[in-house]
Length: 268
Image (cartoon, rainbow, N blue to C red; front, side, top):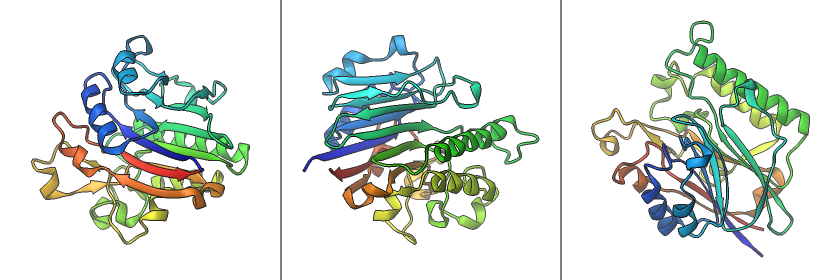
């Protein structure tokens, strides 16, 4: 039986926070790291630094200053080049790979648009883009049929459940927890018959957060978090889930991202 440890992390600039990747590897011992918001054109990706951490297999889709996703792996993989160009924008928000593990494993790394501040698609183009992106992802999953031997991770920028936010009542009109976003994300999940791996292991009503705003003077004392970072698995992998970690101490690292790494372990 093979153990596979997958971490997802919105790093908020891979070059700026490259030293923190060493802390992540030390603390979490991942086999695969899926990054979002790398903010780095492919030609400037820090290959030497990530190679030194023990990840010889790497793929990335990046652009200057915004967005960007990357997969770092200790195990070989093949990049899935035929996955869609979401909303026709070419804005580096998705990377799919096929991992070379027993039985094979399809892995998708997503960075969903944040959606701006106003939860109204008519007056806020960023919110419209977010909903359109999820609608396209939902149609893509529905067209592919039920997922098998698959994992989807990333910063999906929506906290769907009541206990995924610090205050369900106060967050209902705040982008990331509005009913229209929750409905959209739930539809995507159902279209692929995905299972929420973290909530499988940490069911409600446990409060679970992966993001704390930079705006709080003392993020830990306020603890006004949201669960924006997700791991979904296909139904046939639910029984393979053997562990998880939400690395909250990472929010207190020097020059920390506002997101923390999230890990799941599978016994394949």
